[in-house]
Amino acid sequence: MKFLLLSLALALCPASSMPPPDRVGLNLREGDIMMPNQRNAILGNQYRWNIPIPYELSVNLSVNYKGIILRAFEQFRLKSCIDFKLRTAEDISYISVESRDGCWSYVGRRSTGAQTISVGNGCGLKATVEHLFLHALGFWHEQLRYDRDDYVTINFKNIITGKESSFYKYYKNVSTTQDTPYDYYSLMHYDKNAFSNGNGFTIITKHPEF
Ligand SMILES: [Zn+2]
Image 1 (cartoon, rainbow, N blue to C red):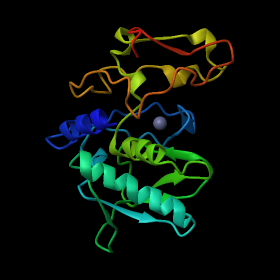
Image 2 (image 1 turned 30 degrees about the vertical axis):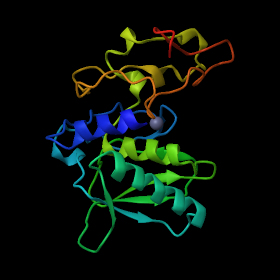
Image 3 (image 1 turned 60 degrees about the vertical axis):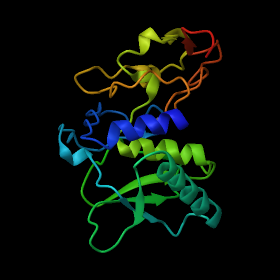
Image 4 (image 1 turned 45 degrees about the vertical axis):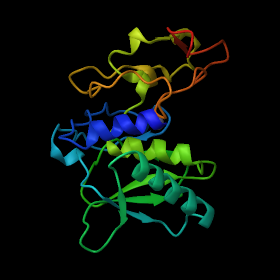
């Protein structure tokens, strides 16, 4: 976690690179990424948020969940240059944190106006909230880095049928590693059983210490 957010600070605070355009097709990609309905994924400044990032907490979030979200913000403040602020009338683009069905987020700033992050029932863990906000900041899952084959082996035969695309890499033309080392401990890394069909691990690390 510490490592991840330090990487985040290095990655996002100076002139940051763009999150990649996504592959439209599924509504929820890789389990928790909400896809835009239209293909508007042009590389450019529109994917960046201005810091501090304005947010609103929906009235349908429980008091407990609101507290967890605020604690997640505190971690970003402590470990990176990312900060958040309550939305005011002047803030056109902002993150609307809501309790919808499941835990999901878009990747990067996707549009003008409100952009939803859903912290639904069962999603009220600080690490989960941080994960969802990291998506909104422009991060994909760590194990989809274009260089991931140097670090992990994906066991496609163990993946639930129909979920294979959740393990496709993002190539250099659409993603950047920001020159950060591969992070097995990243909050954005799936665990070894992710989307397993019950026949065994889906992700095997190439370094046994991890
Ligand atoms: Zn995710």
